[in-house]
Amino acid sequence: MTLTIRPPAAADRPSWYRLWNAYLEFHDNSLPDEISRITFDRLLDPDRSQQCGLLALEDGQAVGLAHYIFHPHCRHVEDVCYLQDLFTDPAYRGQGVGRALVKGVYEAADRVGAPSVYWITRDSNEIARALFDRVGELTPFIKYRRSEFRMPGSPYSSPFGRPPD
Image 1: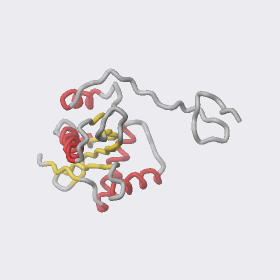
Image 2: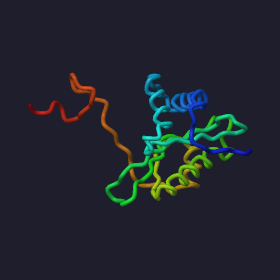
Image 3: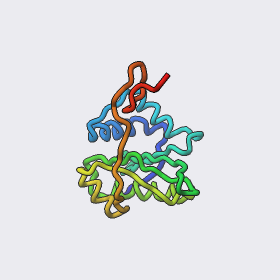
């Protein structure tokens, strides 16, 4: 297998959508088309250099994707890199696609001087964890996020109730 790892181009939109929707389905997720369109457009926007993507291609066919974000960090002088999404077409799993994409993200981080790369995955995603155990190290941290509670009249959630007037 000869893989090419490169950033997506405008002509890759249909291939990217196919992989992106499969990734969302794998995680029991769905998004409005507008969010997917905006996400792809951001990956192509040269003025948004902190939000990046890679495609893995085998004989010109997109078989995997990675999205990553550079951002400042309070405990580093350099920016750090968050590998936000990683997906390999199920027909190509176990053939080095995910590893090549992670390597591509590491190389991109090195080019901009961001030596720290981190990511999350489901604890039940044994296939991804087997790869991640080879290319990274498990941290002791647990992820939390804002709860789904919505304050009346607000699109944002808060476990603290209504703020004082």
